[in-house]
Length: 242
Image (cartoon, rainbow, N blue to C red; front, side):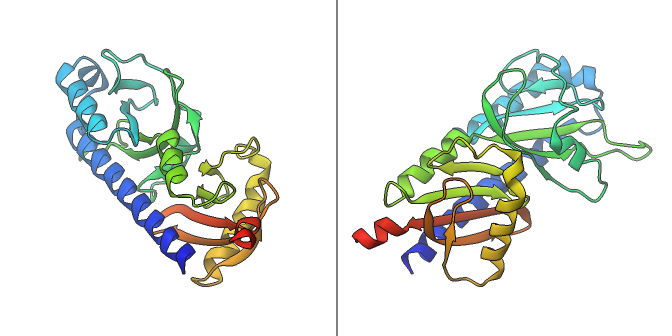
């Protein structure tokens, strides 16, 4: 019962975080709609809007930005004018190529051009009547460091694990961190483990971690319509000691 209460708290916290991201993305997309990339690039007022929105979500939100139709940055919250870094190879860009995709949750990356770790959340700038396609995308980002610090404050024992996953098995944030969590080859096994946990019912199950091999009593919850899962696992040795 304690594990289930804890994971429900974690789920509500994660859903609030995603709701904040959604509101920020919608506000920026509304202000960017119909405006040319060069207009946005040279608009100091638009930059201040991005900076204010990012600041309102700090420390959970590490930055927000807008790209042009070629996925080069035209405005960003952290600097003015923004350096035109190319983001066309990011996985969320490919996700948003699907016209049915409303939002995209990217894998953890080093943000360009600043280099700090981010978990991107993106949506298209809405196309105006007569436009064939949207003029770029809006991107906000979770700070994995902030998420992991919160998870560390919740974990009851040193080997308990709290992790936020994408449904395909990508590890978005985890406490405690492991060296293998960014290994793409592990994602199919993690995805299988997550699917078994969330479809087996609301209770806890014994799971051997793909990442560190420890056996834990684990509960996982999906995060609404977002392609993400939050999980909390209590270490077997810690239960034995208690």
